[in-house]
Image 1 (cartoon, rainbow, N blue to C red):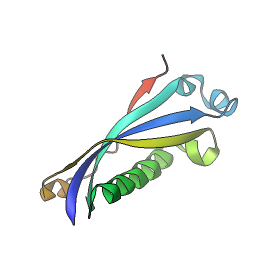
Image 2 (tube, rainbow, N blue to C red):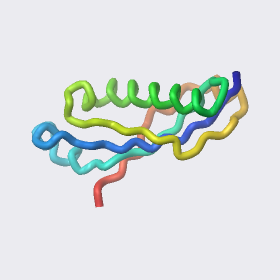
Image 3 (tube, helix red, strand yellow):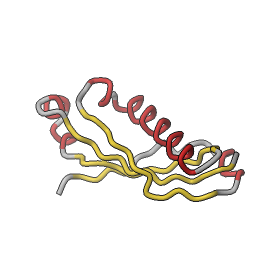
Length: 101
């Protein structure tokens, strides 16, 4: 097992009507970037673990996925080996959102 840094790109696809009903400003969000440090045996497993943590955290913070307001697709923009001590730090659970152009 090794530590990996995974830069995740999330794309939001809003369900017509539900997103606007929740908040018109949120409906303008097209996606986000965030990162996670994960313990995994290879890059594929690192991406899967990072995706699961990102999806769970986003849903806990916003409820958008459970409510059916949006669907989420995730992509690993970067996966690199990282020093194991990075796992000792608490997760940065923030997301950097961007709007539709």
